[in-house]
Image (tube, rainbow over all chains, first blue to last red; front, side):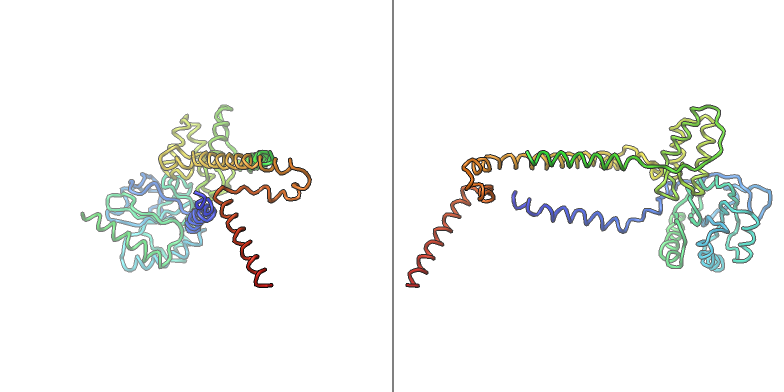
Length: 180
Length: 191
């Protein structure tokens, strides 16, 4: 018992060290999404392409697709754009844009300058639909399966490594899940 | 007695630090919303103080300048005007942003330790404190004897303070005896 007492400070040190070591690698900035495995929330919104005609979930692809939250004010979105452009060129997966809290003219201008990888750009200028999606800032990226169920979410910028290591496997998993 | 006083003064310092940290100033964002009743306004204040901003993370909705915080305040306002209950509004927030938005976590199996962990630490602290006091109380009698035997004993205060077990005393006697033998042996060879 006395021996144990002697080692108590060392034991306490190791317990604290383990917790703090883990704490170093905890990412508190990305929230786990509660919408995974839930259907994409319904919406009735304008789009950049179709003028005043409202679009809804019925207008979305019948196959797995990526839903990317972007805005012309968003610098990381600029960084993601070439990756999405390449994905469009190689026809990897349809990409739908959600133009989040932006101005229509600024968004159109941005797409013209940087290229438009999106099949459809849904306009959420008020940010109301973003709230339904649990979005808290562009860029965020959802992967939706053929049944319209959200299967994967990435918060923050997608670079080439994240695309290869996380997005592509997630797409493969969603496609495999859809077949079975 | 000294141990007890130290223990309690440490306790008082802890309580003061806790109180000081719980008094924090908030910098409320100013929204222009018209409420029908004072009660609605109070609920709005309370709710936007209790939800955490998902973007700024260390601010509540009422103090966060973030865009999404303003949107969420607007939603809370809308729901209050529509006559939704606090529980419904909390459900709205939870179904979109998860437990993260609650500054007051729900009591679930996962949060048990979060809620009751501090009491475990309090118990552990009390146990340690109790032991410290008991040990210092046990030492009292020997100190008393030392000071009781006059001024000469006072100078050897530190020595008198050391409590040794019977086993240790035996070992000490044995060592002293051995030492005596050695000194005698050395003396013999010296001659």
